[in-house]
Image (cartoon, rainbow, N blue to C red):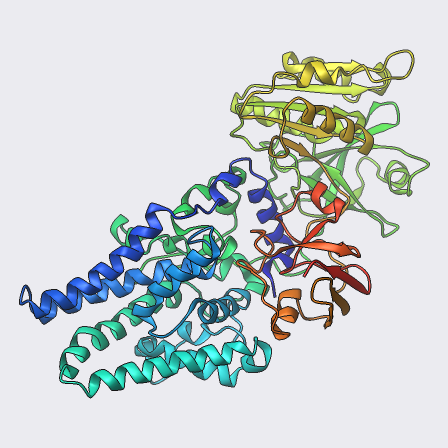
Amino acid sequence: MPMTKDPAVREVLNQIISDPDYGEVAKVPFLSLHQFSLVALCWLGAFASVYGYFQGWFGAPVAVAIMFVSIFISFTPMHDAAHQSLSSNRFLNDLLGTISVQLLLPGANMPLWRTLHMEHHRYVGDEEYDPDDKLVNTPRPFGILYLAFTDLHWVHWYYTSGAKERLPARTQYWLFLTLACLVVSHVGFLLSPYWWEFLVLYVLPQRLGLWAVVYSFAYIQHPHGLSWEEQAFQSTVRIKSNPLVRLSLMGQADHCMHHLLPHLPWYRYGPVWDFANGALLRQNIPHRGYLTPAKEIILPDPLGSDVRNVRVTRVQDVAKDIRSYTFEPLQGDHLPTFSAGSHINLHLPSGAVRQYSLLNAPFEQNRYQIAVKRDDAGRGGSKEVHEVLKEGGIARIGKPHNNFVLYEKAKRTVLIAGGIGITPTLSMAHRLMQLEKPFVLHICARSEEHLPFAEELRNWAFAPNVEVHFDTEDGRSGFDADRILANHAEGELVYICGPGGFMEWVTSVAKQHGWSDKDIVTENFSAAVGDYAEDKAFTLNLAKSKRQLEVASDENLIDALHKANIKVPFACMQGTCGTCLTGIVEGEADHRDAYQSDHDKSENKQMCLCVSRAKGDEITLDL
């Protein structure tokens, strides 16, 4: 299962990928010095090991040690190549990956390794489908010695787990080719006069290297019994050790980062921990040592614990038809912390669920505040709130979620609110004031009586940062968007919240003045993150090849295409990298990726094959 179907993971991924700094980190260069150095180093080391031994420069122990290190190093470029992150050029990516893999798994190629490895990424912790599950929970009586023969384990897994029927037919040919190369090379050398040197200089360090690779990058990285599907953030770990050990793991000390964003090159994991204001640091990702297990693993709350009862401690009319509600915990309970821009689900007695932004300061403990504008012509939710929520009564709310993250590293922030859209921007203003960050808050309202929190806005600490814009006598907005959004500087962000038409207008003016998509953040409650319709089967039409495929309800598009022996590029299988982005010719997609913007998804011109599906009974793609 692609992990982006887990709402909690998808929410964090959306926050990280929307971070203005993410685009630069996610770019894969044509060839970086980091990657080229590893490819060159592993083969230079292997050559030096053999040549130096035969020249008498050093003995067998030194030669074995050099070969062992070279084989260990070869795993990282081979691994990154599987995720298309070794080079932006796909031919060079697979060429260098295939060159690297020969030291560790002679005869293997990137299509074979990528197919096997991506099964691990999709099914971490699944005893049947994850090819690496027994590398974490090694079978008795072999124990961790089993890791030295991982290549034989993968062959056994392929033929006993149903992978032969599930994966592309050509995978079997690549597997046969790899096994043939392995057998021929070993038999050839063992029958030659150099059989002893072959055993000592290659077979021994190769098995030791394979053991070290699997121990370092699989065995210690995944707590047994936890899976992507159920405990995504807890099914991978961070390695806490001395700097030398962390460096030797070449990024995989942050293996949890790799599983969240597998398309990132290994040397770029570090900066992402700061993205989305450190959202990943709050996800209870387990920590362990290189030799010592995690002391404690905090699992997600049980299903159904999201909704809780709270006390309505204050109800206040704050503008014409707008009422504020303050919620506090019942005795002995507590409220989860929230970040600026968050919203909660309010569960009404009628069964309706409505989303409302939290407007109070995020540093306030055990208190949530929302504001609701009554709309008698709406769907009835706001009217019910105004009629049934009374001071001293009980309300049912969900945990805070954030689709409108305030990225706190901006050099300057422009907050623009239209009407009731003021609510999340107030929380942001409180937070920016606390951080002593430069910002301005523009509030648009029809008139003084329609301005929410008019009195508070004159007395809050950030009052000097507030500009209010009332409509003119002819009913037009008094907000001079051209003046306010002109002279955009690098590092500035603009946050826009309000009615749909208002946000579209302000966004279009911002773009005219040089604000890019990454500089503009808008709030969108149209679809909750991870809130998908039930998967159903559909027909896939291929415009170029004139073929038609049936995609089962439990099958993704990439699997369906590969089973039909149609190659498409992919890297992450969770909708975060855009490698499998494909043009839509006809039909509407159910977009589930975290890669495209809301605007891109609304245009419906492309879809990510790894996670998205057809909304209707069929869809036609440019394949």
